[in-house]
Image (cartoon, rainbow, N blue to C red):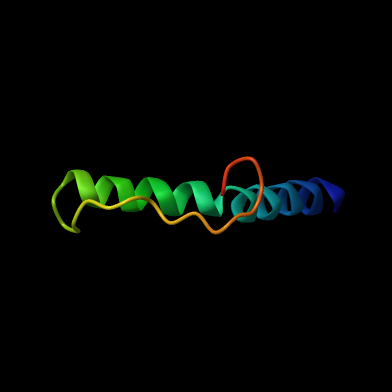
Length: 51
């Protein structure tokens, strides 16, 4: 039973932990393909990454 629960919890944690990175990468890819205009990536965090 724990062989299923522990990996599922780990997957969910990593899925939500890296969501901002996935979103930024998707937006940067769309900008490089010309689908959206070039602009700074939106950063909403108030830490060493965001200002």
